[in-house]
Length: 209
Image: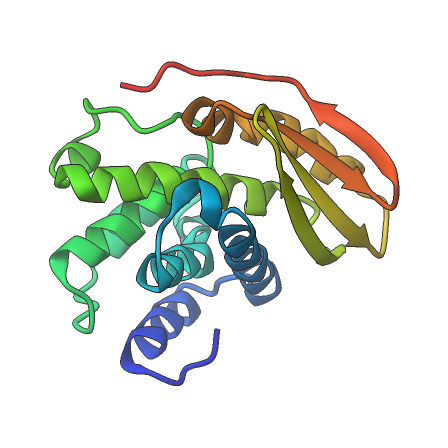
């Protein structure tokens, strides 16, 4: 992300204020944006939603400034409480919730910050957070190992193809956990192919509320 417009500037200023890990954040931002484009036939969202996903990717770990435990919830609160004047209230709510659901529990109507969103915004959060979880898993080691990414979409699965400049053991394990939301929403198994070594990510479906 470059600070070339007021929204990007505001997001970067917030991220820097809370000492974000720029390398990891922007790698996840890049991976999320690429996954968004590759998977567009499934989610059918547009350029505006891609930007919301990328902003959330940049900010997803700012909760570490408070503590590592529950940092996804802290990120939600921190983004929600910020003025972020270039954004509408709805946009800020979507960004905050995408960041919140990059790990752990899936969206639930009993979660206040999620419940107060409109139906359209909740749908965006569901779709975009499921992509962010995949992107975050693909940089689990924080070493920016993935250098290229593409996807093949099948009726029962998606195949993520990556080129990597190191061992992807941590990323593979993380993806096996964090593919749950994507698999629940899109009813497709997630598979990963790294330099020709293919693995399947078992389905871990979770009930969405």
